[in-house]
Image 1 (cartoon, rainbow, N blue to C red):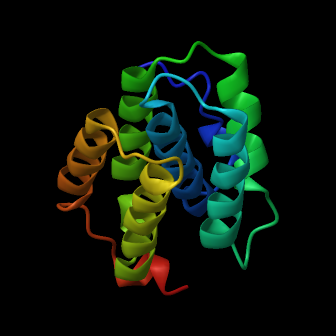
Image 2: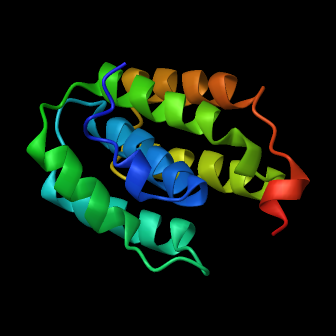
Length: 142
């Protein structure tokens, strides 16, 4: 899998998890074919409100837009790359963070009504793909 757009070596596992969910949120916003200017604002607001890292000094929304605007909008490869990072860094995935991630994706899907069949399908896929991931309290309780 090509991870050239995923700056993993430069980020902590916790940052990688947030970056990955931001990419999935972007894929969700793009699921209906385009990210409209209104969607960008809503996306930014949702990500900013829900994924703001209390102990990290990075703006995930700005990073996601910068990376995704520079690469082709291939929803499937974006989703797969992000899921791979979630799996790779899942030991840091607390139950609370997992629920936050699901909430973010639900909110992004609903941000620009109506929720399309593609968005619904992508959410259901994400819900199924994240279900078996369980973090280790040794890592996420730090």
